[in-house]
Image: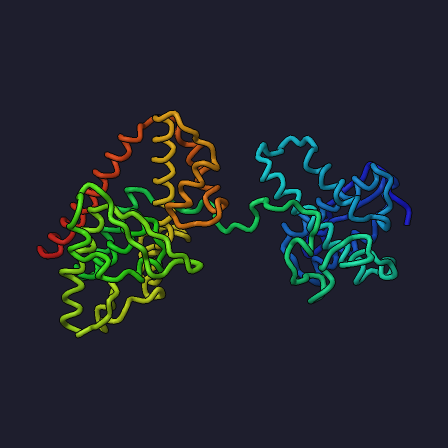
Length: 417
């Protein structure tokens, strides 16, 4: 197979039915047939999304261009060629190249995966390549486990399927900066619950999202709280200016972290236990110790029920996907990072991303710093020291008082109806 020399040209063809195909040609305008066969397979057999096909086409265009410039035949490509291709893509100057090295690593990894998938398909399906040991786990030109199990997908980790991709590029983190609530959303949700539910249920629902908002707990941790953790001797004892320490019985990955809870938030939980929850206990003869109980049965409130409550609220308020209960944990994260950065600016301390991430990881009960990356980047872009740490602490206190007043007003409106 002769090596196509530059310029390598990628052309977009639209079939009579509107389906888009891609054609790669060499300097003599000859189609590179293995590429075309692969694109046809992606479109007609795998039924890939048009953007997926386009991405693979552009990745392979760059790959063939690289092979041409380095006088490498596509049949002779090996791990070393892939490493050089990776480094070439990472270093190349492009008009839209990001200054974020991690983002560039993720982009390069996407291109590399497309090349691996191309060679896996070639060896399995193309007659010109079947006789070659192009790709496999051992004694092959390209090391990869893509063909070892379940056809061309493989089931091994990325390190086996795509060995030369950049490691720790932030691709596996599920945390992206989604919907983040603010005080206006807080007011809207409080009003919604008191307008829609009986007062006792509204108070319970508001307390649940306030715990996610003020402490950053996940749904499972909130629902695992027990009444004795907020007993009078815990909440009312000691220095009232200091936080109380609470360890939710249920935490992700089996962690057993202890979290500081502001005293005023603890008092709200205690008030709920002594009033709304006490009524449920008396009426249902419940013996369960959890703070949040089903008002009909007295059994612990389930995670599914809570998700349903907040999902219905999201739709009723016209909020986007991701604006459920977990969104209030994101709100806590956002506020925490802003206050942390402001405090460090005021004290002249380091405000680097890793330093901030370490602090917020402790607050959220995370082991990995990658989970906070999106929030830290966003906060660093927005904050320029325009408000001091003390200003924001005072603002948070006033916001909490306003939230409590809104709940009281909503209760009064309900009684007046």
